[in-house]
Image (tube, rainbow, N blue to C red; front, side, top):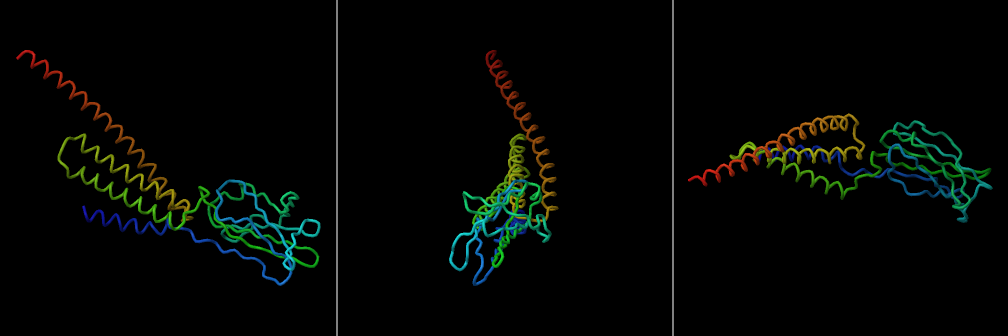
Length: 258
Protein backbone atom coordinates (compact mmCIF):
# COMPACT_ATOMS: atom_id res chain seq x y z
CA UNK A 1 0.00 0.00 0.00
CA UNK A 2 2.90 2.35 0.79
CA UNK A 3 4.21 1.84 -2.75
CA UNK A 4 0.80 2.76 -4.20
CA UNK A 5 0.62 5.95 -2.15
CA UNK A 6 4.19 6.86 -3.15
CA UNK A 7 3.35 6.31 -6.83
CA UNK A 8 0.21 8.44 -6.44
CA UNK A 9 2.20 11.22 -4.75
CA UNK A 10 4.75 11.26 -7.60
CA UNK A 11 1.89 11.37 -10.14
CA UNK A 12 0.36 14.41 -8.42
CA UNK A 13 3.76 16.11 -8.25
CA UNK A 14 3.86 15.85 -12.06
CA UNK A 15 0.38 17.40 -12.31
CA UNK A 16 1.06 20.15 -9.75
CA UNK A 17 3.05 22.45 -12.07
CA UNK A 18 0.10 22.35 -14.49
CA UNK A 19 -2.34 23.65 -11.86
CA UNK A 20 0.11 26.13 -10.38
CA UNK A 21 -0.55 29.85 -10.28
CA UNK A 22 -0.36 31.82 -13.50
CA UNK A 23 2.35 34.49 -13.60
CA UNK A 24 1.08 38.04 -14.14
CA UNK A 25 1.49 39.32 -17.68
CA UNK A 26 3.71 42.31 -18.29
CA UNK A 27 2.15 45.71 -18.87
CA UNK A 28 3.88 48.63 -20.50
CA UNK A 29 3.23 52.30 -21.19
CA UNK A 30 4.90 55.09 -23.12
CA UNK A 31 7.79 56.68 -21.23
CA UNK A 32 8.13 60.23 -22.50
CA UNK A 33 8.96 63.51 -20.81
CA UNK A 34 5.93 65.08 -22.45
CA UNK A 35 2.84 63.78 -24.18
CA UNK A 36 0.05 61.55 -22.85
CA UNK A 37 -0.17 59.34 -19.79
CA UNK A 38 -2.80 56.62 -20.21
CA UNK A 39 -4.32 54.98 -17.12
CA UNK A 40 -6.36 51.79 -17.42
CA UNK A 41 -8.65 49.61 -15.33
CA UNK A 42 -6.68 46.76 -13.74
CA UNK A 43 -7.35 43.61 -15.73
CA UNK A 44 -5.92 40.12 -15.16
CA UNK A 45 -8.54 37.60 -16.28
CA UNK A 46 -11.79 37.61 -18.25
CA UNK A 47 -14.13 34.74 -19.15
CA UNK A 48 -14.36 33.12 -22.57
CA UNK A 49 -17.33 34.06 -24.78
CA UNK A 50 -18.25 37.14 -22.77
CA UNK A 51 -18.47 40.82 -23.68
CA UNK A 52 -15.85 43.03 -22.06
CA UNK A 53 -15.74 46.81 -21.82
CA UNK A 54 -12.21 48.20 -22.01
CA UNK A 55 -11.67 51.74 -20.78
CA UNK A 56 -8.80 54.18 -20.23
CA UNK A 57 -8.30 57.69 -18.88
CA UNK A 58 -5.83 60.02 -20.63
CA UNK A 59 -3.79 62.76 -18.96
CA UNK A 60 -1.22 65.32 -20.04
CA UNK A 61 2.15 64.15 -18.66
CA UNK A 62 3.43 67.70 -18.28
CA UNK A 63 0.65 69.10 -16.07
CA UNK A 64 -1.58 66.13 -15.15
CA UNK A 65 -4.70 67.60 -16.75
CA UNK A 66 -7.32 65.15 -17.99
CA UNK A 67 -7.84 65.17 -21.74
CA UNK A 68 -11.14 64.84 -23.61
CA UNK A 69 -12.27 64.11 -27.15
CA UNK A 70 -12.21 67.81 -28.02
CA UNK A 71 -8.45 67.52 -28.59
CA UNK A 72 -7.68 63.81 -28.50
CA UNK A 73 -8.71 60.55 -30.17
CA UNK A 74 -7.85 56.99 -29.12
CA UNK A 75 -7.61 53.76 -31.11
CA UNK A 76 -7.96 50.20 -29.80
CA UNK A 77 -6.06 47.03 -30.85
CA UNK A 78 -6.61 43.47 -29.59
CA UNK A 79 -4.13 40.62 -30.12
CA UNK A 80 -4.32 36.87 -29.53
CA UNK A 81 -1.57 34.66 -28.07
CA UNK A 82 0.04 34.35 -31.51
CA UNK A 83 0.38 38.11 -31.83
CA UNK A 84 -2.22 38.34 -34.58
CA UNK A 85 -4.74 41.17 -34.69
CA UNK A 86 -8.24 40.33 -33.55
CA UNK A 87 -9.26 43.99 -33.56
CA UNK A 88 -7.20 46.49 -35.54
CA UNK A 89 -7.17 50.25 -34.88
CA UNK A 90 -10.82 50.71 -33.96
CA UNK A 91 -11.81 54.14 -32.67
CA UNK A 92 -12.72 54.23 -28.99
CA UNK A 93 -15.85 56.02 -27.78
CA UNK A 94 -15.46 58.92 -25.35
CA UNK A 95 -17.74 58.76 -22.30
CA UNK A 96 -18.59 62.32 -21.28
CA UNK A 97 -19.90 61.21 -17.88
CA UNK A 98 -16.90 59.14 -16.89
CA UNK A 99 -14.36 61.20 -18.86
CA UNK A 100 -12.81 58.04 -20.28
CA UNK A 101 -12.43 56.27 -23.61
CA UNK A 102 -14.24 52.96 -24.02
CA UNK A 103 -14.32 50.04 -26.40
CA UNK A 104 -16.77 47.14 -26.05
CA UNK A 105 -15.33 43.87 -27.38
CA UNK A 106 -17.94 41.27 -28.29
CA UNK A 107 -17.84 37.62 -27.09
CA UNK A 108 -16.70 36.45 -30.52
CA UNK A 109 -13.27 37.95 -29.80
CA UNK A 110 -12.73 35.63 -26.81
CA UNK A 111 -13.80 32.20 -28.02
CA UNK A 112 -10.55 30.49 -26.96
CA UNK A 113 -8.78 30.45 -23.61
CA UNK A 114 -5.24 31.81 -23.68
CA UNK A 115 -3.03 34.88 -23.30
CA UNK A 116 -4.27 38.07 -24.95
CA UNK A 117 -3.15 41.69 -25.01
CA UNK A 118 -4.56 45.03 -26.05
CA UNK A 119 -2.95 48.24 -27.17
CA UNK A 120 -4.40 51.73 -26.83
CA UNK A 121 -2.91 54.59 -28.86
CA UNK A 122 -4.06 58.16 -28.19
CA UNK A 123 -2.88 61.27 -30.05
CA UNK A 124 -3.58 64.70 -31.39
CA UNK A 125 -1.63 66.95 -33.73
CA UNK A 126 1.53 67.41 -31.62
CA UNK A 127 1.45 64.84 -28.83
CA UNK A 128 0.47 61.24 -28.18
CA UNK A 129 0.90 58.22 -25.97
CA UNK A 130 0.25 54.50 -25.83
CA UNK A 131 -0.17 51.63 -23.41
CA UNK A 132 -0.01 47.85 -23.84
CA UNK A 133 -1.67 45.44 -21.40
CA UNK A 134 -1.61 41.64 -21.24
CA UNK A 135 -4.37 39.52 -19.70
CA UNK A 136 -5.65 35.94 -19.52
CA UNK A 137 -8.86 34.50 -20.93
CA UNK A 138 -9.99 31.39 -19.01
CA UNK A 139 -12.98 29.04 -18.94
CA UNK A 140 -14.25 30.33 -15.59
CA UNK A 141 -13.06 33.93 -15.66
CA UNK A 142 -10.78 33.25 -12.67
CA UNK A 143 -7.11 32.39 -12.31
CA UNK A 144 -5.37 30.32 -9.64
CA UNK A 145 -3.06 32.31 -7.40
CA UNK A 146 -0.11 30.79 -5.56
CA UNK A 147 -1.94 30.36 -2.25
CA UNK A 148 -4.98 28.73 -3.83
CA UNK A 149 -2.87 26.37 -5.93
CA UNK A 150 -1.13 25.04 -2.80
CA UNK A 151 -4.44 24.49 -1.00
CA UNK A 152 -5.94 22.85 -4.07
CA UNK A 153 -2.99 20.48 -4.44
CA UNK A 154 -3.30 19.51 -0.76
CA UNK A 155 -7.02 18.76 -1.15
CA UNK A 156 -6.44 16.68 -4.30
CA UNK A 157 -3.60 14.77 -2.63
CA UNK A 158 -5.76 14.04 0.44
CA UNK A 159 -8.65 12.78 -1.69
CA UNK A 160 -6.38 10.55 -3.77
CA UNK A 161 -4.68 9.03 -0.71
CA UNK A 162 -8.02 8.43 1.01
CA UNK A 163 -9.35 6.88 -2.19
CA UNK A 164 -6.31 4.57 -2.31
CA UNK A 165 -6.97 3.46 1.28
CA UNK A 166 -10.62 2.61 0.52
CA UNK A 167 -9.81 0.72 -2.68
CA UNK A 168 -7.01 -1.18 -0.92
CA UNK A 169 -9.54 -2.14 1.76
CA UNK A 170 -11.78 -3.51 -0.98
CA UNK A 171 -9.07 -5.92 -2.13
CA UNK A 172 -7.66 -6.88 1.27
CA UNK A 173 -10.47 -6.62 3.79
CA UNK A 174 -12.35 -9.82 4.58
CA UNK A 175 -16.02 -9.31 5.13
CA UNK A 176 -19.44 -9.05 3.61
CA UNK A 177 -19.67 -8.61 -0.14
CA UNK A 178 -21.72 -5.38 0.07
CA UNK A 179 -19.32 -3.82 2.60
CA UNK A 180 -16.32 -4.52 0.37
CA UNK A 181 -18.06 -2.92 -2.62
CA UNK A 182 -19.00 0.10 -0.50
CA UNK A 183 -15.29 0.65 0.16
CA UNK A 184 -14.60 0.36 -3.57
CA UNK A 185 -17.29 2.89 -4.58
CA UNK A 186 -16.17 5.37 -1.90
CA UNK A 187 -12.56 5.11 -3.07
CA UNK A 188 -13.59 5.39 -6.71
CA UNK A 189 -15.65 8.57 -6.17
CA UNK A 190 -12.76 10.13 -4.21
CA UNK A 191 -10.45 9.45 -7.16
CA UNK A 192 -12.98 10.92 -9.60
CA UNK A 193 -13.46 13.98 -7.39
CA UNK A 194 -9.70 14.56 -7.25
CA UNK A 195 -9.40 14.23 -11.02
CA UNK A 196 -12.38 16.55 -11.51
CA UNK A 197 -10.71 19.24 -9.37
CA UNK A 198 -7.54 18.73 -11.42
CA UNK A 199 -9.50 19.10 -14.66
CA UNK A 200 -11.15 22.34 -13.47
CA UNK A 201 -7.77 23.72 -12.42
CA UNK A 202 -6.14 22.80 -15.72
CA UNK A 203 -8.84 24.65 -17.63
CA UNK A 204 -7.92 27.84 -15.79
CA UNK A 205 -4.17 27.25 -16.09
CA UNK A 206 -4.02 27.61 -19.89
CA UNK A 207 -2.45 24.21 -20.55
CA UNK A 208 -2.48 22.33 -23.84
CA UNK A 209 -6.16 21.75 -24.82
CA UNK A 210 -5.29 18.14 -25.70
CA UNK A 211 -4.68 17.46 -21.99
CA UNK A 212 -8.01 18.91 -20.87
CA UNK A 213 -9.83 17.15 -23.73
CA UNK A 214 -8.31 13.84 -22.66
CA UNK A 215 -9.41 14.42 -19.06
CA UNK A 216 -12.90 15.35 -20.27
CA UNK A 217 -13.24 12.02 -22.07
CA UNK A 218 -11.63 10.07 -19.24
CA UNK A 219 -13.88 11.60 -16.58
CA UNK A 220 -17.01 11.19 -18.69
CA UNK A 221 -16.25 7.47 -18.96
CA UNK A 222 -15.31 7.32 -15.31
CA UNK A 223 -18.60 8.80 -14.14
CA UNK A 224 -20.60 6.39 -16.33
CA UNK A 225 -18.78 3.50 -14.64
CA UNK A 226 -19.36 5.10 -11.23
CA UNK A 227 -23.11 5.46 -11.64
CA UNK A 228 -23.32 1.88 -12.90
CA UNK A 229 -21.35 0.62 -9.87
CA UNK A 230 -23.28 2.88 -7.51
CA UNK A 231 -26.59 1.60 -8.88
CA UNK A 232 -25.47 -2.00 -8.41
CA UNK A 233 -24.36 -1.20 -4.86
CA UNK A 234 -27.77 0.25 -4.00
CA UNK A 235 -29.47 -2.85 -5.40
CA UNK A 236 -27.11 -5.10 -3.39
CA UNK A 237 -27.85 -3.21 -0.16
CA UNK A 238 -31.61 -3.32 -0.82
CA UNK A 239 -31.49 -7.09 -1.45
CA UNK A 240 -29.28 -7.62 1.62
CA UNK A 241 -31.60 -5.56 3.82
CA UNK A 242 -34.68 -7.41 2.56
CA UNK A 243 -32.95 -10.75 3.12
CA UNK A 244 -32.01 -9.73 6.65
CA UNK A 245 -35.54 -8.60 7.48
CA UNK A 246 -36.99 -11.76 5.95
CA UNK A 247 -34.51 -13.95 7.83
CA UNK A 248 -35.36 -12.21 11.13
CA UNK A 249 -39.06 -12.73 10.48
CA UNK A 250 -38.54 -16.43 9.73
CA UNK A 251 -36.47 -16.84 12.88
CA UNK A 252 -39.20 -15.24 14.99
CA UNK A 253 -41.81 -17.53 13.46
CA UNK A 254 -39.64 -20.58 14.19
CA UNK A 255 -39.21 -19.48 17.78
CA UNK A 256 -43.00 -19.32 18.21
CA UNK A 257 -43.35 -23.03 17.45
CA UNK A 258 -40.49 -24.16 19.65
